[in-house]
Amino acid sequence: MAETAESQMRDFLDDLTARLRSGDDMHPAPAPVEAGQDDVEELTEIIQALHSTLRPRAAPEDFAERLRADLLDGEPGVVQRLRQMPARVHIAAVLAVFAGCGLLMLRRVFGSGAAQDVPEEAVATPL
Amino acid sequence: MKNPFTKRIDYTALEDKELVALAKADKAAFGALYERYLGKIYSYVYNRTGNAHDAEDLTAKVFFRALAHIGNYVDRGLPFQAWLYRIAHNLVANWHRDQGRRKIIALDDYVGQASTSEAPDRLAEEREERNQLLEAARRLPEDRQQLLLLKFVEGMSNAEIGAIMGRTEGAVKSLYHRTLLALRDEMKAAWPGDGARRRGGEEG
Image 1 (cartoon, helix red, strand yellow):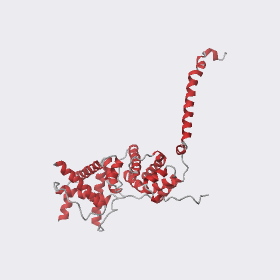
Image 2 (cartoon, chains in turn red, brown):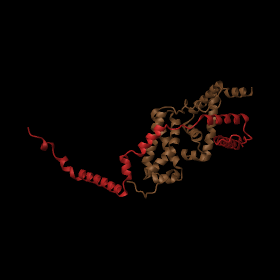
Image 3 (cartoon, rainbow over the protein chains, first blue to last red):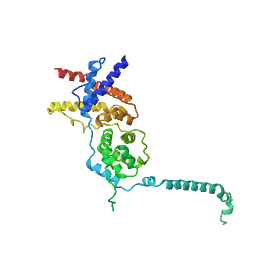
Image 4 (cartoon, helix red, strand yellow):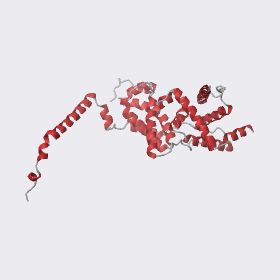
């Protein structure tokens, strides 16, 4: 029962708000039967106050024009340019990165062992 | 030199879906989306930050981010504006986290703006009432402030709000009911007896 009363109140407040916003506040929705008169009055007052207080805020014209120019006339950034490249260029770039990483790993495993094994005395300059 | 046989597209006549598809490769189409949503996004960000400077900065970031990611935009049945508002919401949330500021509904710009009465004493009373309401709204949790702005400032339906906030229509309606109750309780706690005084004044 309490749930029904709450649901009726919810619908009533929602309907009242929609009517206010659309300018049709001359024919208010009937208040829920089980709701207290004080509740209905107080919440209706709050909705009306919110409606008359919260208003849209327009963007300043100079800001709107400046931002439009920055967005649409500006040079695209590096990321944007990369995104716009064809798929085959993306694939080639990924393959090149993998090949580079593979080459570095191979050099580390097979190529640098000799250099690390050289004894200190062998490279020291004799006095 | 422009090709005289190229057909000019009237972007304003296109729906969001069509514009978004074009905007992936055509900046002019993105420009049409920008024109369509700049006012809404600015208004939303302004109300969430409380000052013009940060509102401009964050609005610019929203559209730059949208431009950078529109190529990856996938239509999942939600309106395009829901995507934009989510970008704005995330940026504003980061801004609040970075600044460690309270979420502010811009007070001074609203007070007295929508006054209907011209009598000085009535104007002062209306101004005071709006102050009280906005101060109570400032103390609400972030999601409730967002709901009030989307409903009253942006004029959105429950379905549109639900798409932006990731809730069902029923959940939005329920959150709105709880928000109104919380606002009433806040105002009663801050100014006890005020409602009775006003009603008494109207009757007497």
